[in-house]
Length: 416
View 1 (cartoon, rainbow, N blue to C red):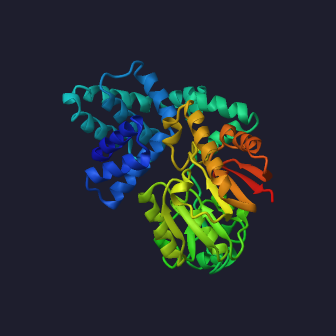
View 2: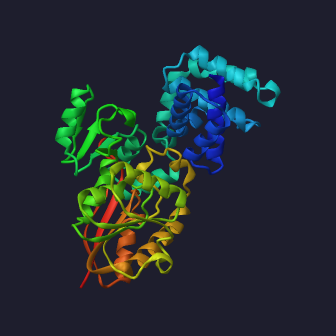
View 3: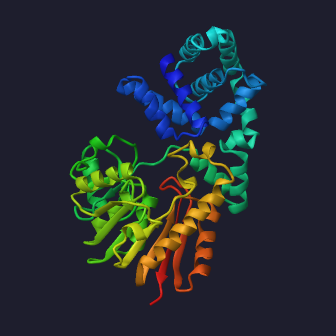
């Protein structure tokens, strides 16, 4: 197990240096051959450590007031503290494994320190956790600047948003409308001993997450995994048979697949990342559906657009991803306050570039997986100022709940 602790500490290091958790985990798994159980343990520990990082850092500083001269030991202690405070792993095993891991770092100079710190953490556990509850960054496990922004934007809801963002995400399914509905699929799951409930006519929430291979009909395209909040995008666009539709930032393809399930449309699935587009293609093949999949920059239509207007455009613009932090806990530690100005410029430029591609009378859905107003309503208000032929039909800010992640949608119509 000390190997898993070492690998987990290495993942934290790569995240600190700016890599995403997905990339850092993949690199660790390429570096070391692991059994399925070990891969699962590594994922659980790294995700958990990043979810609880504010508290873990607070506890570590209480136990060791000054940062250690060897950062690898600090990260090892964070990982071990997560195991002691938040998992059912045997205390003696966690401590012993961490000491063994420390023996391989800095010529073993910190073996005694690691042993002492972790044993003190066990002895002072209740006192340390109580103190952490009195510190906002430790209590809510988000950077202080993030807390301040949410408190300003959502004075009555900010604490609930943060608590929800620290929980494990729900596993929600989208039943392919061409093959069934939520009620029928819930009954099919029940027959296999899997508890679930319908959220709407085609969305199903699993009581306990599972491997997709366990889902009846998954390989045949009868069902997909997609957050209920993300499922709202296709419904908002209200596509009809025969329409020409653009999904401007399509990867990994969940929304593209949903649009094609709802109507026989001519869909262009576009994304700047050619590697990620392979997932779009794979999803469409599994669903038995087809689209024109194009690797190109949506903000440069002169390079790829054929000049024929679209009836509907889904503009799922780049954003902070602040609404999906519970699925990607690295986001809250990777983001910086200055990021929002740059993201806002990208969002505005992309929306402006796509608007001329929309037919008169057509609709464009501006979408983000963010809960920050400067990426959402403020962007739409600025867009409306720049485009007098645009009309806001409706918009909605979805905040993270037990049933869905955080998203923003604004449906814009082009006046004829």
